Length: 313
Ligand SMILES: Cc1cc2nc3c(=O)[nH]c(=O)nc-3n(C[C@H](O)[C@H](O)[C@H](O)COP(=O)(O)OP(=O)(O)OC[C@H]3O[C@@H](n4cnc5c(N)ncnc54)[C@H](O)[C@@H]3O)c2cc1C
Image 1 (tube, rainbow, N blue to C red):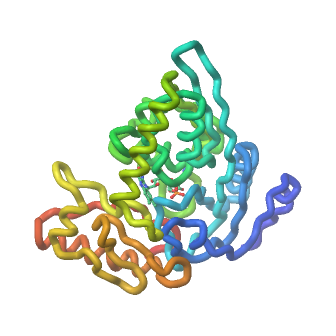
Image 2: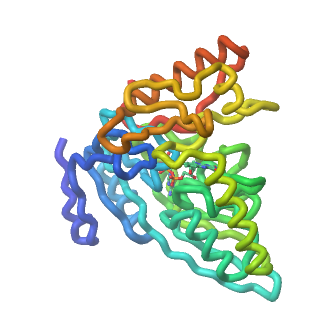
C-alpha cells in the first residue's frame, strides 16, 4: 500500500520512512517506524491525526518515549513525534492561576515554568521524564503528587478525530491509569490524542517551591540509576514494593543480552551500553524472568508499568 503524503508536505509536515525509534526512547531500544513525522504545534498534531483517519493509516503518538518498550520490529503505520511545546499562564487572582501546556511540552519543564511563576502544585513533576500528553494519559506521579491533583481539563482528539474538552473527572483517574490509557492499544491505531492540558495551580512562594523541587531531584539522584531505562518496570503491588520483591528474589544485577536489573534500584531495568547495544527482546525476556522468579519466591505476580508498543507477537 502506498500513501500520498503531499497534503501533509503542504502543511509543512515532512513524512519520512523507516526512521529508527530507539534514540527517541529513554531505554534506547526499538526498531523503525514505517512512517514518521515530527509535529511542533497542536495544529500540526491535529492535521497529522486527521490525515491518518482519512487515509486509514494507523498512527502512534510518541512523546518522550519514557514509558514504552518499542518492539525491535518497530511500529507499523505513522509515528507522530509530538514536539508541540506551547506553555501559557493565565493569572486568575492573587491566589490562583491556570497553566496551559501543549501535549508535547516536557512535563518537567512545565513544572519548572510553574515554579518560576511562583505557582505551586506541580513540583513533584520536576523529576519525571516525558511529555504532558504521556503524563495526562498515564496519570504520572511522584513524591505524593500526581496529574489528577491539578489537571482541570484537557483538549483531546477523540476516536473520530473531533476535538473535545475532557474535564479531569472524565479521565476516571486511578494509580498510573486513566480512561484514555484503558482505551489505548499498544499498536498504532485510531485512539484519542491529547492536544493540550490545563492545570489549576495555587500562588505560592517561589523559593519554597524551588526547595521542594530540589529535594525531589536530590532524592532521585540518590535512589535511581542514571543509565538508560524506562523508570519503574513494575507497579507496586498493594502493600509492598516491586523493587523490594525483586531484590528479595536475588535478581539485582540479573542480565539478559545487553540489559540488566539495576543494582541501585531493583525495579529499574537498565541498558548500560545505550543505543545499539541491547534489544527490546532482551528487556522483555528479563521482565518475564523477573515475573516468574518473584512469583515463585513470593506468590505475587508483578504487573508491568512499562507498556509494550509496536509490532510484538
Ligand atoms: C528515569 C525514569 C523515571 C521515571 N519516573 C516516573 C515517575 O516518578 N512517575 C511516573 O509516573 N512515571 C515515571 N516514569 C515513566 C514516564 O516518565 C511516564 O510514564 C511519562 O508520563 C511518559 O510520558 P512520555 O511522553 O514519555 O510517554 P511515551 O512513553 O512517549 O508514551 C506512553 C504512552 O502514552 C501515549 N501518549 C503519549 N503522548 C500522548 C498524547 N499526546 N495523546 C495520547 N497519547 C499519548 C503513547 O502513545 C504511549 O501509549 C519514569 C521514566 C523514566 C525513564
